[in-house]
Image (tube, rainbow, N blue to C red; front, top):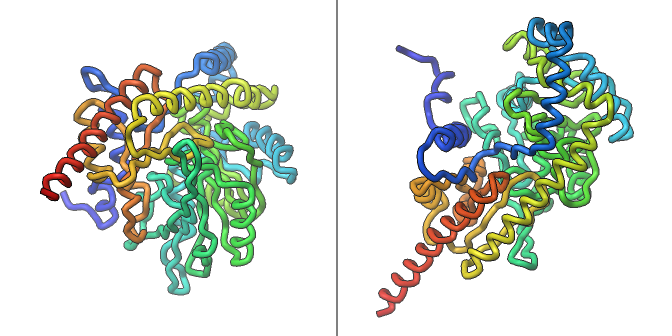
Length: 428
């Protein structure tokens, strides 16, 4: 069978494909498995009880259930959900929004694909524009969606602040930012996947000003952020204006299986999303919006985030940090300050092997993590730090977190011990 050039991007390996394949392997593997690699949220019993009750109410309502599963929605997504969400966001942002500012997609990954390719690549005037990532490492799922023949992402190396308790924090290097007309958009995730970094309000304001000056849109990936699911553990304000494209998701509320992405933007962008939905999938799914609309209308969604979701992940984070302190006390490790999301970004300074080698060795022992290199765009200037980190998902059951971190510590320890031994042998 012969495929077009378009198909070649699906025939090769990628960070996104490996991420999802690892999730599948861990689910079906036999023996002791520690799944610390994927982005699956935790199963929070109290949240799932509320969602089951909401679903039971839906299935008991013959008309509502019939419409949810038996009818197409509007290309922009469920109107009642969009109107209700617009009211919530108007209150959050202090700006008047309507359903014309909101569109639903079949998951955030679908949103990325359309937006990145609409704002980068070849333009009618012959220019080629890229998406600027002002703070790398960044989400691995971005890098595989580009349809252009050449890379569409341009990364900026983060500045590193060393902090007490063996922690560190990335920050935007504004001296090297240098936005220009070669950039079609700027994109940040907040909190950042993979590091748990929360770009400060000051950094967000500076990015907003820089983007406005160059008339470049700012894309903010809020899959873990504000206003929901609210997995931010440090002071931060919700952010949007008419030059911003905010991406939200229902996945990290505990609903990754229903694939519901949300785009908040000016009406011109929303019309683009609607047309794409109609052409490529006829309409987005009704299930997520129909399920969540009553919770939004009752104001219940915000309390779920504030009283259940965020405190749960804060406890999980603190537990994982305590385990690391116990099992890695003798290792040269730094942890990115975990300000949000559900990951720990572990930096083993001067790691004798690459994080890819470490990833493969850990997987052979049933511990799934993610290596650091795929979280950097290919055009990024090589940097040893890119090879010294791994991402760990601490949303797994406590016993898996303990077992996985213990195995990681042992494998890393053996590499450092072997390096010391080789150095001594060389000296002799």
